[in-house]
Length: 189
Length: 189
DNA sequence: AACAATACGGAGGCAGTCTCCGCTTTGTCA
DNA sequence: TGACAAAGCGGAGACTGCCTCCGTATTGTT
Image (cartoon, rainbow over all chains, first blue to last red; front, side, top):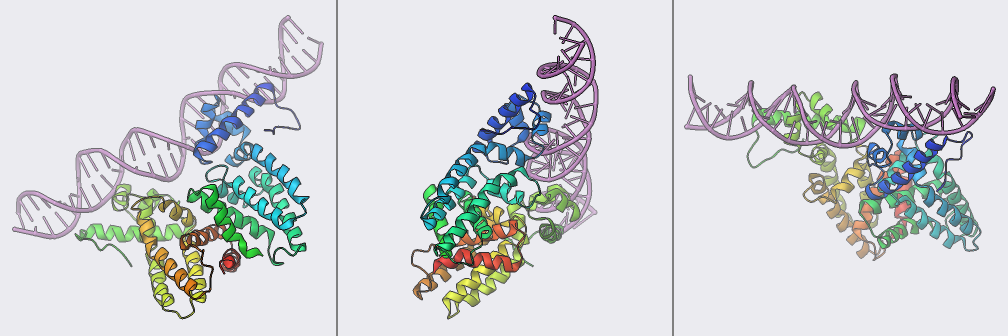
């Protein structure tokens, strides 16, 4: 849930609209992917397009807000895994969770990849904790000698993203994703 | 180059327009990616939108036609590599060439992935020789004991596509692509 | 030369994005 | 509590891209 903690709090009606928009967007993205019509989301939320675009000047911002729950869950997992005493298993579990996160909405990998090429994208910022955790877990796995020393954590993040992309394009099952991910990442050892 | 060999030959003006459209499209895709405006391509080719859509009812068809040259080159490479006596090296070279083909135009991996979910897509059909060759080279590499027995050639094709996608999203250099591809595919051995 | 088949092209309907600005709601201060 | 300024609303509409329909033009054949 969460966001909308601002320096100056929103007016009551504005906060109500904000929350409603995020809620509707979350459903719409889940059902029809992140490319679904924003005017339509505004309409379903019972607000005008102008209101939606004032709160979320870019689609990315709305996606990031809608992703709140999934990000919270990953945050918790991150805390658990960075404290784990089996760095190899922790990294594996993390990569799978990451891939599943990227499959939350259809076309999300594309949006995120694009966000990485945009300064100050809210979606990019929302990925910050994820890339940070990836870097930490990669470092720990290296220390433990579980993976090669020349593995770059950014490459690995990109690789996981790309596997999520592929499995989404193929409409793979969870098992399909896992198989693909195993194939793609088995080379790090 | 290319195509337009029909059961009933096109009328002279139609053939002229067809060729011109493909030529212009090829440039436009190269400059602005496969998502560029089709009306704009029609305009630059000096024809009306109706003419473009008659020749190419779907964007996929136009993409496939514009890809003609690159496909011809891969065809030649396929002949060479399937006759090679070093199956491991042949597979590596093929995967790199494949990845580079998928990077011909921005967003091509996405279009191709979508084409794979569409019956009778011209773009999908244009990939047929590529997936076939991949299957052959994978089989030969297995016989030679160069790669694991449980590697599925379709998974491998998807993996190469996804690496092409990622390196395109990151605007990677050729060297970047090669590094990423090596990381992703080193697990097949 | 004339005619039928083939092909052209652009006007226009539709959908989605995004903005502008006159109007409404809210919160605050007396 | 009333009144005012600040904050926020929303929908009309400009713009872009997709794609079709059908009256008109071109081609090739007899």
